[in-house]
Image 1 (cartoon, rainbow, N blue to C red):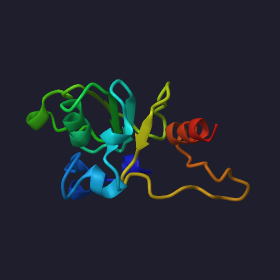
Image 2 (tube, one colour):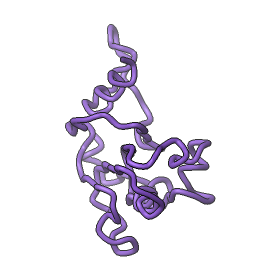
Image 3 (cartoon, helix red, strand yellow):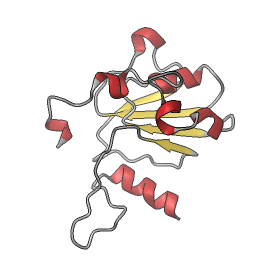
Image 4 (cartoon, helix red, strand yellow):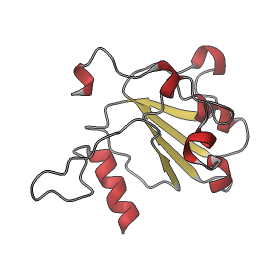
Length: 138
């Protein structure tokens, strides 16, 4: 399991990825996340790294921003304690969102989906992601 690994995330991959620029969500996703949201709408970022993109987004408008990462490496020194984003340290193997979101992102966080014999093609083995797939599909 990832929780037992000494190497959890590549620093350049998620920890330093911002909202805009060369190493950004806008570049990786091919669209600017805030252009997909109206004020007050919710963005859940799974495997959010330092939470930098969410913290930057919180300074650009009033959004309901939630980030979840396995490692408590949130960039509070540069951005303050969340800056309007809720940052959660948890494993996606056990964490459940408890609600729906208008935008869900996971950039370079979940690379594989379990497709064993008889498995649901949307089954990842991670309850939070599975419940999100179900809510998106329905």
